[in-house]
Amino acid sequence: MTAFARALQRSRKEHGWSQENLARKLEISQATVSFWESGVEYPSFKHLAALVALVPEVLPYAHQEELELIRRLLRAEKLAFGGGCSCQGCNCS
Image (cartoon, rainbow, N blue to C red; front, side, top):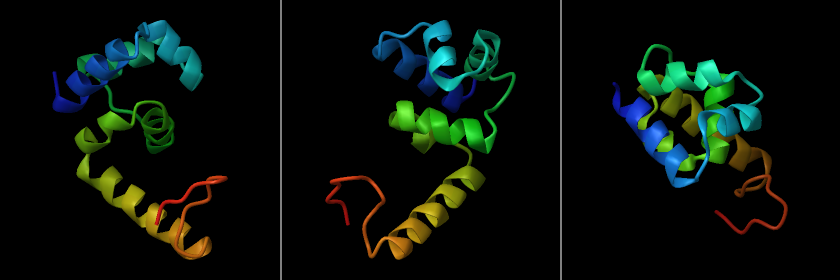
């Protein structure tokens, strides 16, 4: 099992979600979550982004390529929104 798979499983359980609960939230199958948690498969970037929105604590365990892409997207968002993010009422900088 990979570090990402362990982190995902731990985080899901800490949230009190079954694999089925998480799958419904992500609009995927329970089998897909099972494959991620066993290390058989790794989420696509689209699914990784949705997953990180639900369980941000797994982000440090993502593959390096995805982390760099997320960093680049965050920098672009800050440029587009005058130094902050696009969240309503957010005060991040």
